[in-house]
Image 1 (cartoon, rainbow, N blue to C red):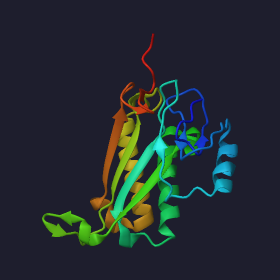
Image 2: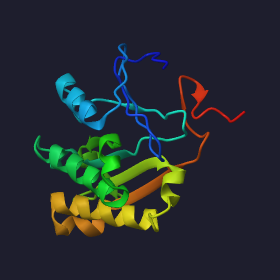
Image 3: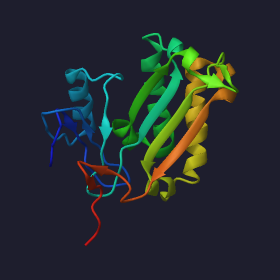
Image 4: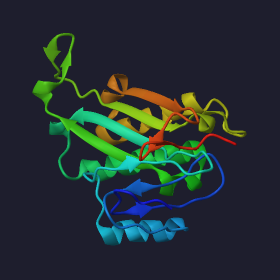
Length: 194
């Protein structure tokens, strides 16, 4: 496994639509079991503030990767953990437990005065959640209408954390990444067949 510019490369390779790799900088090792991954993540002290570059595995799978933009003022040091867990659980409700260890959640706090709606600074908590995953994961057998399920599940998760009053303001974008449309280290991932 290549580890150029990688400090940490945690991975749980396996069959199915998801692969898993998180990279920080300079040390690399493989992990092949979700519980070992969770323990290693805890030992290494990885937190939501850690910046990750999401990569894919040779089987064409991409990590389910949430990016959440939210008012900085809503993040109080306790809500972050609740939101990360709720979004991970939302993914698990659609894809099953196998998705838990692969979910990546990044929270981006934007100060209220830098967030505008209708030409005015925003007064309402209106989180924007993007979920990036391999396009094939949106059409798995046994997962009927995955985009609709994901949008509903993610919206429920955000409302669970911030209260029902936020539900109608939550925007969810499901981004299916086609095979060959992502890359790591300047190379297309997964590599073209042949």
